[in-house]
Image (cartoon, rainbow, N blue to C red; front, side):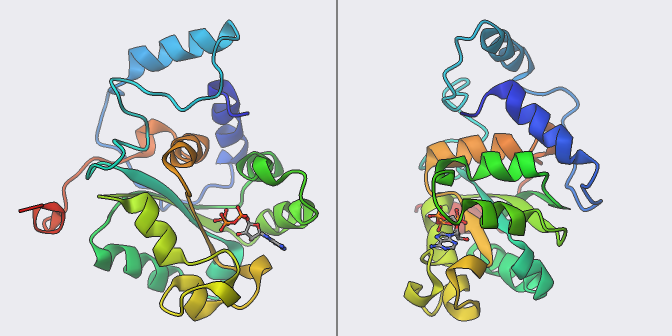
Length: 219
Ligand SMILES: Nc1ncnc2c1ncn2[C@@H]1O[C@H](COP(=O)(O)OP(=O)(O)OP(=O)(O)O)[C@@H](O)[C@H]1O
């Protein structure tokens, strides 16, 4: 299971291979610093059960159902190698979502294994981890906006590209389930865990795009 200390350790393990395109947070002091410290202390006593951190009703995935909702999206090595990064980012940007973090890295085996831990018993698990850690980098991102978790999955398309909507990323660019280009969180709990696994809170930028109010308004 994901624990706070494990997540920090896995991020550190991959840090040496992180490239220089990370966004930088403008916050000098983490908003949840004290609470995170408390959560870490709880972990030390073995009381943390692996549930996403919910601080003041929020997690690193923002607020479910609100404009602050966040999803973890990763362009896999085939997407990078096929030079589809720009096209994929454009889809999220043009929909109106906000890029709050982005970095290119080759994940460590430990990070890849933890990310796909729910699939550990599946026959393709080892091949999946080997592929994600092969050396061609991934592009890890956090996107923010209303319903971004569910809409992100729609933009990405069904797991098997042969079943994906033709207008989705996988449906337009992929044909094989083992090379389906991209990952996106499939639930709020997954988004909370994955964002914390791949990013430090200090890497998540806070800003307001000029189009934000026009895109996110309800009236
Ligand atoms: N039968 C399979 N053979 C090979 N690889 C597979 C197979 N099923 C899934 N995978 C790989 O494992 C990944 C994770 O599978 P999962 O069932 O979680 O689907 P997903 O949530 O759509 O994918 P992802 O987690 O990458 O977004 C898939 O995206 C794919 O790369």
